[in-house]
Image 1: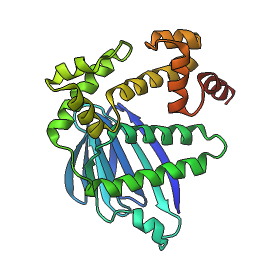
Image 2 (image 1 turned 120 degrees about the vertical axis):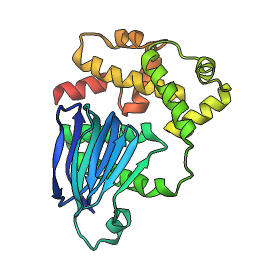
Image 3 (image 1 turned 135 degrees about the vertical axis):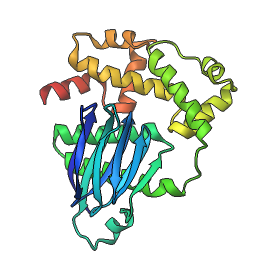
Image 4 (image 1 turned 45 degrees about the vertical axis):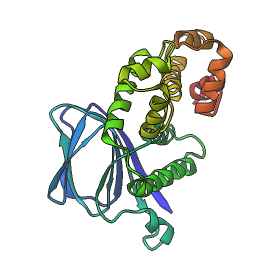
Length: 259
């Protein structure tokens, strides 16, 4: 259906820019942090964290930083057959910039796409293709989904920033509700609608992301990592890690270090 040409993660590249050209491939972009400017067919757009961009093949595109470096994922691809109706169903004919309602889920999928493509392990091609197709489906569905009000994005982002600072601590929904002056039930429902997961699930995601690095790049044991990240016991850490990463911490270490 599609041939994935490249997946990039731009991590605060100084003086990042792309030359003005008619691109010979389709591009999807998720802005993770900061802002980036794109000129699309002569019109300038400013994309910020949480924006999902779809840039069709043939678009005359240029891009640059907006005063400070940014972080974003980019995937380049083309249909294998230009008359494949299934591929055409998922492609956009015009440039699209949208605010994704389930941002964290989409962020995770881009991260997994980049990781699997970079590692190049057996069967990564069909896995990456599946993720690409899912992201294209989300990009098609999002514009027709009920929009999330800007105030909910603002409140959800405020909670995210708090959790990013305190994810190793015990998190109480009542404290998050007090932070945004809303009820606990409203806080949970609003956050899930805007971000795509509950606050506790988001904390688990932050912890597992940190654990993934610590397990490979530090001398800490699995038990020490579990305690450091605030899990109440190692078995709980194992369950959460395996649910998110599809393998246990021990298997994660063995598979990556043997690679």
